[in-house]
Amino acid sequence: MKVRTAVRPDARVSNSVKDALSLLEKTNYDRPIAEDDIIRSVADALQYNSYYHPPDYIRHLNYAYEAERSLSAKDAIAQILVNSRMSALGKRPLCQDTGLVSS
Image 1 (spheres, rainbow, N blue to C red):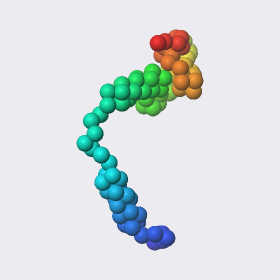
Image 2: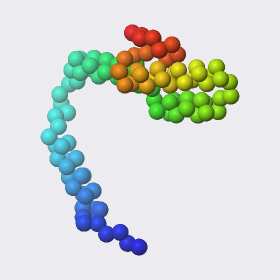
Image 3: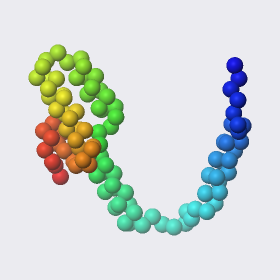
């Protein structure tokens, strides 16, 4: 069965490439990177990492929770998952195992 599209797929790709090339032509690469830009970028990255766990970490914690037989270990893993969620939703850095605000 053939799938019909209103626009040829290669036309969409061609337009995106043209748009990207046009943007590159307008970009000024001769400008040095400002110190404030570096400081802001590093600060933003550190802040982001302080309250978001990587998705694979959360996924593996979920796997560990499902596989765990010990009730106390399951409770500990559940608390880490709850703390991680609270941290991400509230954008507050939390200690991974205690849930206390850390700085």
